[in-house]
Length: 350
Image (tube, rainbow, N blue to C red; front, top):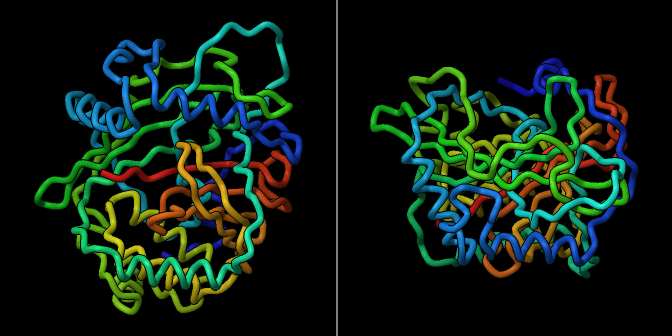
């Protein structure tokens, strides 16, 4: 299923957010606050006392609580799509009373990149080589994704609610998505991250799903070489020869949502993105889970209204996070300012 303009419009129709000023950046205090809350207890959740400790401890707790809840049978969407509705990543916040009633943005602040000397080709070449040389690790079908996406019902909402999502698979290829809320937060117009500005679910609340599926496009394990991965994609979603880097990345992102990929598989994915062209370097960043990384910008010749920000871990070079950015010029009902984050997601290690 090639990603056509009609399909893209279907994916993000109904989006009707309020305008967000350009150039908002979170402060160092904002990011420190987020990292602190990922390490500390969350007092606003009934399960808060169980989530003290490291990020790994919190991930393990969320896995256990999700599996203990009632499974939600839902359909996995076809994967030939840019990350323009793949939504994204959890942020914890300290909850403190507001002393004023500021104006709120409805999108998160963008990641702030610091310039580096390497080009995109150099970053990708180094990352691909490092991943190919990394110790072998078996891929598993239990990827844990933290995500947020701009709401698509046409109603602006200043409360941002990230979701923790994990696909759980059965032997016959069917599965269910276990999904719970992360810590909700809001962003003021000056870019400050604050407690929720309105009604918000408690952290850890189960989220409803719709439907169920009997099979999955990516049930078989993806190959660990670029040629094999290209054939794997073409067999499932259509020819990729004319696909640009953003479309290729959209498929890789969807595969990554289902699979905790091995380093070699991630190297193959980066090769496909690199070979499609349209990749530039943004610089070093700290992602929304406090992890250091290098950010690459993925552009599209066919859909210049959107770009993706791909984050590679500084040490391991693995794919750890991605944002979708509205670049402007859409004829649809997107009313956010160019440069706004319309979705984000991160993948967590086991």
